[in-house]
Length: 169
Image (cartoon, rainbow, N blue to C red; front, side, top):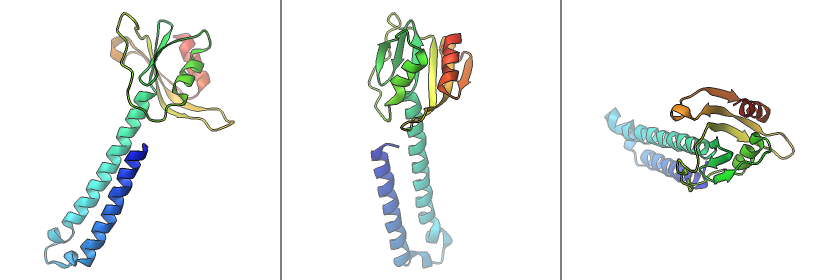
């Protein structure tokens, strides 16, 4: 998760602990009506959990989107890297190099015009981790770009499966 999102969540949790402490020290939990007693406190904690879940879901979607690579016509397009030429090396190696150093980034590169680039395949990476000296953990799916990305789908669980899928397509 992004550092600024972590800072926001940490500040919210600290504020919530202070709020709960003040609520209890102030004696607001001792009133006669249960709705007045615990209602605002419970709603506060529920809202905090909802905001936390939304941050995590939004961050996960952004990470998958930034690791998506479009392949077509001897070129690769990634929202964070832009349009690059594909070399004769295995496409899976190029896709791996394209997404390897992406942690979090803004969507800086606009999708190329239709006459400059027409995607044939979409590689969506859902999980990519690489520890030093170990092979990368790489999971995702390959989708035909025809019909707006609703074409055939094939899942892969490692780089070899992705390479096989890209060669077959």
